[in-house]
Image (cartoon, rainbow, N blue to C red; front, top):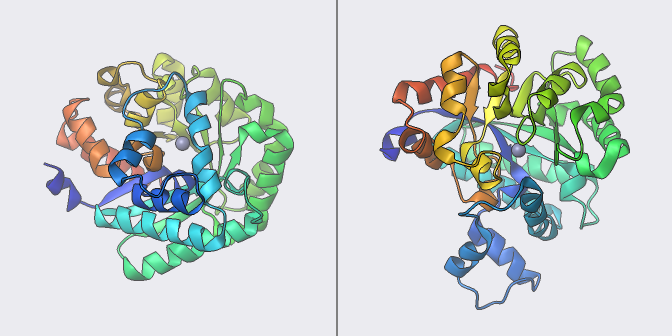
Length: 328
Ligand SMILES: [Zn+2]
């Protein structure tokens, strides 16, 4: 079944590049740093690091990200990570790929500047694009909620200064502790510039583990054109109507939502219901380095666990294509 989907062009809009390191590379890098024993097998390593059962909360998942930060400590490694991610996506037939990363997060344990990290990822992407020219790739700049309002404002400024490196801007991290409205002031310049510049795009992680209020705030205070996750929109009839009317796309990540317990029962995932109501929803992997998933495994999950039809899945892939920040 998955081989049919492999040959179909696919679009993914929500994948964290900094948490997408392939397991064999992550093992090699942790061994080089002495964080993992030289005798550890790939199978044992995968068992230890790849989540197969839900953690207690999204906060716990965010804690597990530290290893990804520690190993990405120089430009060559970032370049390699980006190259391998594009290669893997291309090999499973993803022809439109939006990758995102947080400059503040990925450089937290290294001496790399935000610009050096961005340029290293871009070099890896460019190198991969010459080898796998069918796959179009764009990079989204993330501001991390946990680093506070000043850091988010600084990231927005960094994004505006480096517009040619990015296709959009995002806010991620714990939305329970850091709701969208809190960051309104950090988005002032960004929203102002956006009015005159069609290249500026905003997506916001919201409504993943909180209710629909945070999605309203992402749109109203932060200028979101797309929402990362947004699954709790389902509980709010007027928001559903607003999302449809204003063509606001939800970047849905089914397996991720179960592993972080944003959804307690995977079979009850709201993706099919959102689609049936007419919301533009897509299918995404979120953090494959931690979840061990891929676009093909997510599609398989949609088909076999969420019982979605082939045409429903096709609709999700088309929705993603129509909602990309990449220039058409
Ligand atoms: Zn995400």
